[in-house]
Amino acid sequence: MARLMTGPLLKEIVGKMNTVITKENPNPLKLSIYSGHDFTIGNVLNAMGLYDGNCPVYTAKIFFELMQDKSTMNVQMVYRNSTGTAEPYILDIPDCGQMCPFDRFVELYSNLVDVDWHTECTYQIPWLTEALFSMDGTFHSVIKIILHESSCWRREDDRQLASVGSTTLS
Image 1 (cartoon, rainbow, N blue to C red):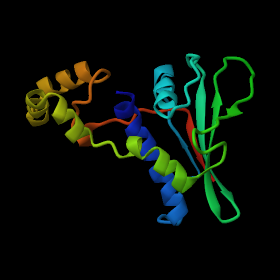
Image 2 (image 1 turned 135 degrees about the vertical axis):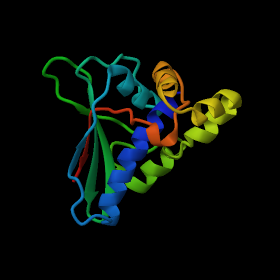
Image 3 (image 1 turned 90 degrees about the vertical axis):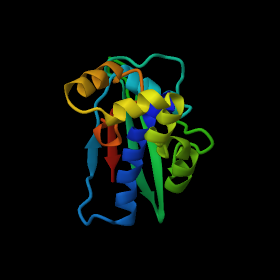
């Protein structure tokens, strides 16, 4: 479930970084900020193999930084899990290190970035998924609100991104 909850956010972050690298947009965003809850940060850390067992506090934050080192674009993740004045620290990305080349980062987390909600959720309970995808009106909205946090039965275009800390693109 952490994969389904984290995948859309990570896909958004990787997509924005890729836009900067490929220069698809002549004026890409330099900073994107996403806000979420402690459990959102916990899910991101857990899904990425970075969770240290300490619950994220109310003011916890993760920074995804895209950094250029000569001709290589790298991803660096910085984490702050404190309500005090503690400085954030650089995370050691599993099988990559503190400065992970962008292509390697995408390869490591392709299982999260390539989530196909419709297919994966249809496989779990096909009759319920089909019913929810075909509903219209108020009842559909009420069902979606009830299932919002505990399931993945939402139409692709209605899906809201889970969010976390901030993403820095340089």
